[in-house]
Length: 310
Length: 298
Image 1 (cartoon, rainbow over the protein chains, first blue to last red):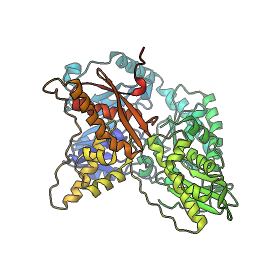
Image 2: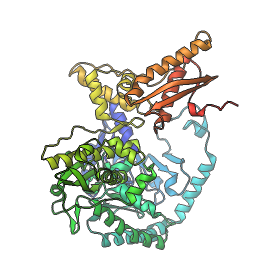
Image 3: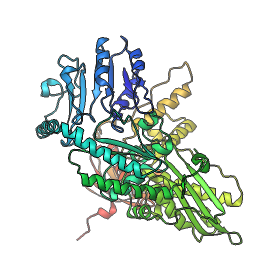
Image 4: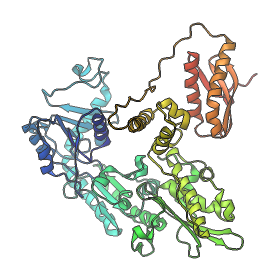
């Protein structure tokens, strides 16, 4: 199978398990902006490939993959195509019937439906076996009593998202850009990650160099601002986000990445408050950092502070 | 990730002794940028008495790394170097009213920075003697490197053996798959190239308790309970804890947790592990409770 090395663990962990079972998994590399190389992709498509799974938009950077085109290339070779569209659904227009996508996964909580409800879309005629067996529900596709209330809620959330699709791509995009500009304009040694010219309208991922993400989150949280981080500590592992590493972001920056996600319910005042709150937080943590001096980053940060074991 | 004690929060939000220390004469730099934790500890030591007059830190790291560094500087001020060398990572964690298991390495980093700074003051070489891997067992904070080393050194073959040697997997059992992976890897290496390695023995799925042939008498039952407790005591004693039977009331087994076990934040996991063993041995559902839960007699 073919996938990318910036997928969500939902896909990557499954791929690792399949590899142990003897499947060959090709993981497409990304460049420093998080883009895949379509020539590499094309070169891998052959009759030994069973399925391609590529995310529609990256969950950390919002970078959009050309899944519609990728699905067409796969279909031409008779290969099934799955996309993890959890981040994209509700943010950008999606018209599946005019694509060659066979399977699409989405999750309700990303578009204001309750947690614990999601969808696996299957194109009619798509060969498929259930994961959960033992009940006739959903015509035998998935056993288990349906969670009707959440299903109705997700339907409603989709309707609302559809109505607000324009707002999402105009007003939300404007607020996101304002937030990003506001932060980048005030703080040195930070940069947005991913492909900023081709990403979801609601996502901004900023790497703050020489400080660590969880510490930033704790201070943001204290001010009532919710964000997320690609640092090792928040992921519960010892390595920073695999997405940042795949893009070649240096460790001193990868640990300090923060994702701001907006929605149609965010207001101008909230954005102004975040723009005001972030610079002092970053300054406070940099003051504690051994990579930082009064005048900015230490002249040669890696040499100025080279801990005993690395 | 956010289950920090009030004291950790307080030290993170208001760190003590942060920033460079101009007159420092002992500096320890430890940490790893890959792991996202790095600490510079600066000490000002009075040469005649070897008393630490002042201590400052600079830390790149998460909330608990900053809090541990802050706590460390407060702890060592006024100590002699020999006293400071006695400070353990557990002392740092205790000072902060405990750290989540995933974050214990922050306190380890603190202790190492202290040793490195003292070595620097004394003009000695300091070398780090521990390597840290991905955290496998969250109940007992055991990482992959530790498990792998123990599996290799002792020729272990099963998850049960790993639990016996390291405690990993002895709590909630969620990490058994991770332990099996390490076993599979080491056993494949052990088998050498060309040989087919046996799959790791997999006791991860506990068999349903088999009902005993006949109902146990109360004396037999208590003897079995004592047997189970005896079997777990060595493990607890290694951590300076202990357990003894307090009372048996119907399906409730009350135990005294002693030493380091009493008040330990892993108390529930310890009791859960003992309870699982009891259920397997007795062949009936029982509850293991701390003696503090015993009903007060009228």
